[in-house]
Length: 348
Image (cartoon, rainbow, N blue to C red; front, side):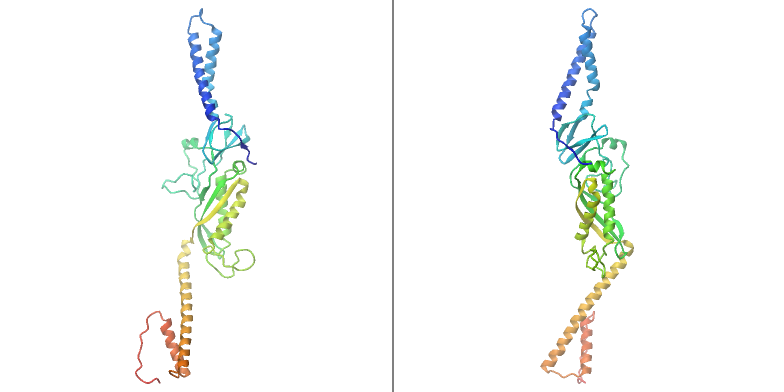
């Protein structure tokens, strides 16, 4: 099913004025016929006044029906119209239109509520995430518009708990910016294009996240080329988001939707392992810092011994060199300030 755009002029105002004028004419005819029928049998021409009376009654009873064909569209809105079950076309473009009153606008996602821009808020005033709020009152259901928005909208699904490639549970939230490209495909190819998009977004997030580790890990291939790389959820958020966008786009193309952008809005370890992973990161940071301190201390000791040898200030045997190296390493690598001890005796 492909979209067929209806090329119509915004003639709704002319049609509305015509119907109002016909209503006024019907009232006049009804009044004229009523006055004639109220006269005596000798001075009234029954045929003409009876026709006027019947015509006025018929139009006043059925004249409201053509008003159903009046449609108002704002910018970036569309109406998918069907006539007795057959797809007629899509009305696009802002304006005041008149269409066949028997045409019915179709939008199966009109009552669907997602955690996205343009949808309702929950009782606490915050936007709903992922869950579909189908508890709509009958009055709200009647007031639902069948118009399809062509604007770019943001879908923000709830945070998901997914295991990364190492099996660590990770919580991740993704925002997807999307819009309707083909209204006919969106309405007729899937049952509900909003629900379809939401489910495909969840599936894509799970499929992509399980390829990556949360942080850089050795011997992990995230690109599929058979070689280990430095890809990670924390360090390659742009690449991960783009892969999520591409996978969602591949799933929703048949629904007439375009995925403009995907962004990771939240990323963290799951609460049950967050404390342990924090300790692990802290330990790793301490080890890296100690390695740097030791490397610097060894370099400083080598430089001190070399300077003493070149300047011939003092000659040290191997035992004294070892003692000096030990003392310097303790001073340079210690986490507290050293307390110097002055040797007032001889060197040996």
